[in-house]
Length: 343
Ligand SMILES: [Zn+2]
Image (cartoon, rainbow, N blue to C red):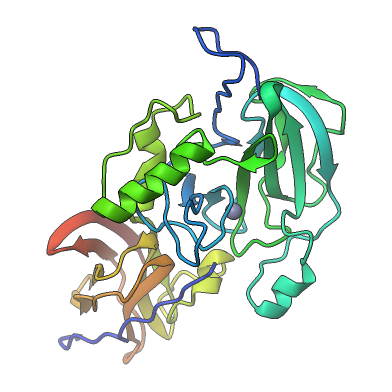
């Protein structure tokens, strides 16, 4: 019988870690972007990091949040783990200006790792030139996957390669940089001037609804900004306490009847200061583990929380194991996710 409620406590890991004219009236200098990745946002892929519009040693992103890191010059579309990928596709039509496809897919987890990719932070990548002085750059592609060469003309949506984690990448993703006449542009804001005034607004007001008229995206901006506000992107079970890197590498082992522990975990992105992740694991004979979660200190790009119990008998009983994770902010449940495992 398992009457006592036990938890391992929570451990958290942080990983740092075009130019075609639109059909409708638009000026000759407008760039319209579609997603640089072929996936279903919110299910297979997520926006992990946004452009840092604060030139100082601080972070501010387009929706007056801090869903990025200091000096980040693009938008990162991630897949769930290194076992997953997706096509990287042209966000607008143009001409391929340059490619690189020679670097290994290797997660950058330390300063030493970072030094090894110094000067080649983009990893395997593609640069496309568009009309009006615009340029898009796609980074961290999987080694050997680049399908275009310099001089190629590509349509919107043309396949450029596959999502990987070459260069300065702590997780598998495609980083999209947008430039006009060499100047970095946040595609959510459209011009460098807009980014400057947006920073002032965010600093003055704390938060402020984003005006979308100058954004370069064709898609609904809300669907792209939603990940900036924090999200549970995965829940699952493990046979031991969960490490962030194991989740990133899809190396978490599902528990079996004789596993040393039964653990439920939740993985989040863009968690905010003060957020809590409440977890509950219920087995066929009752509650195995439960935690209200401690308030998280500071903004976290990635976060893994887990709760579980060690095996203190012959084996785990057959039946359904139900894990529930809740993201709680200011006392309100922002998101609730449930996973079920049958033994
Ligand atoms: Zn990036």
